[in-house]
Image (cartoon, rainbow, N blue to C red; front, side, top):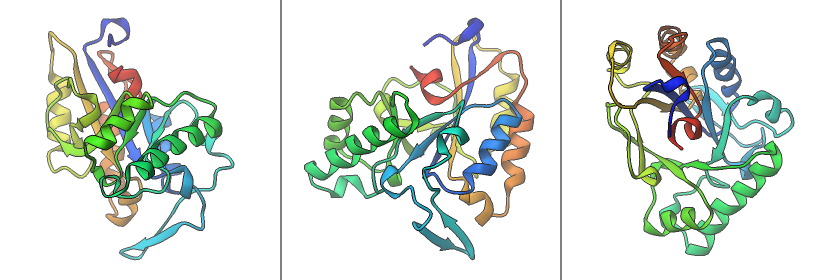
Amino acid sequence: MTFPNNKLKALTFSYDDGVEQDRRLVKLFNQYHLKCTFNLNSGILDSSSQWEEQGVCIKHMDVPGLKELYQGHEIAVHSLTHPWLEKESLETIRHEILQDKINLQTIFDCSIQGMAYPYGTYDDRVIQILKENNIKYARTTMDTENFNLQTNLLELKATCHHNNKNLMQLAKEFVAMNPTEQKIFYVWGHSYEFDVDKNWDVIENFCAFMSGRDDIFYGTNSEVLL
């Protein structure tokens, strides 16, 4: 992958589940001209699919309007119904991944290239099915706290979750870098966590600090990784 204009630094985001809080997050990313990959479970994209966490109602969004909402960002697989894939039969794993990809490509009229593992878990069977279905990268829930390129994109680790205590320190290090080889700052999470933790300021401050820098390429996961 070569970043545009020979830039050597890139910033990308990955957020899971397709819940109502994505609306505020998309608006924030658009405000700062940042790009995100949203990993969706097409089998439960329905507002009747909801739960409560620390008094916060979290519900999936209905399909109508999602293509317009996520315009300019990337859509990726997150499995059909968000199971622990490694606990399922081979047939179920295949259905969860392939049907989600098919559904999302139909809903968003796009080509799906990536995935985030539900719960961050997987096994060799899951990886093999990703390969069979031309999924080129898949994000885990593990953090590296560094910006190095990775060779195994089907066991992809992010730089950090947005709640990482070192988020802004890492941001300052990344901005100050003058690398001689490509570096990627990759942030992941769930948008509902900002309501649960009452910390939307964390992502707002991060976006404000990182945006508008001439030496950083702002792209989706596939634009940055592939």
